[in-house]
Image 1 (cartoon, rainbow, N blue to C red):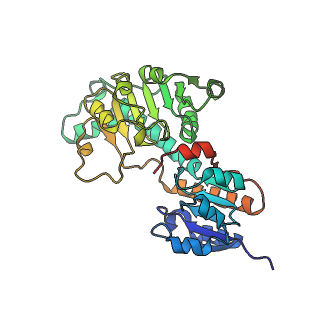
Image 2 (cartoon, rainbow, N blue to C red):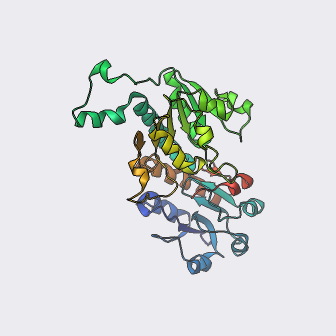
Image 3 (spheres, one colour):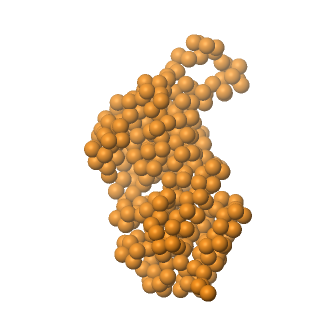
Length: 337
C-alpha cells in the first residue's frame, strides 16, 4: 500500500474558518495525511518533526535553505496570504522544483469591487453626506452636489498592474473611463495589449481624476510616493490606497489629504492594528476603513478552492493552475508583512 503524502498546515494568521472548513478538511484528508497547527505559527520543534515526510506545506513557515535540505519530499509551499514573505529561499525552491504559490489572486476580486465603491463614494462625496445629514447640515439635490463628480468618462490611473489591477480594470470599463497605467515592471507593449495607456508616474498622478494605488511594496519602491510626487495630484482628484501603505510616505499622504490637496480613501496602514491613540484617526477629509477590502467570505472560499485544485495537481505530478507562482527574483524583493 502506497504511503500517503504529508500535508502540513501552518497558516497563521489564517484560522480554520478561513482555510480549513469541514469540506476542505475532508478533501485534504482524501489527498494525504494532514498535520495542522492553529493560533500561531507552528513551533520549530513541530516543523522539524515533520520536515522529512512533508510533501505539501500550507502556510507562511520559514523555509531557508538549511530547512529545505531536511525536507527531501517537499513538492510545494502554498502561502494562503496574499504576499511573498522574506523567510523562504525562493531561488533554492525554484532550483529544486518546489512550487511556491500565493493566494493573492483569490483576494483580487473583492479588493477590486471595494475600490470601485470607494471611488464612487469619494467622487460623489457620500462619505461626508452622512455626517452632514446627521448634524442637520445637509443640502438637497444640486445644492449638495457642488463638488460631486462622476466616474463615467473619468481618466483613471492604476499605479501597479498586478492581480489587483487586472481584477479592477474590467469593472471600470463599463463606465467609459480612460485607463492609464504605470508599472515599471511591465512593458509598454504589454500594458497596451491590456487596453491601457502606459504613462510615467508623474503623468499618472497629474492627469487623472481617480488614482488607485495598487502596487506591492518591494526593496526598490518603498516610499516612492513621497510628498513631492503626491503634490502632483490635482486638487479635485480621488486617491484610493488599497494595496500596501508602505509605497507612500504615509504621514505626508494624510497631511496632504487633510489640507484637501486631494480626496483620499485609505484601507491599509504601515502598522496594523492602528493604535487607539494614533493621530491618524483624527485626520479630516479621509475615508478610512480597517483593511477590509479583501477579507470577506467569498475570498476565503476562493482561497480554499484554488488551494485544493493546485494541491491535487501537484500530487499528481502536474503543474499548478490557479494560485500565483513565485518568480524567485521578484518574490525575494517583496517587503510584504
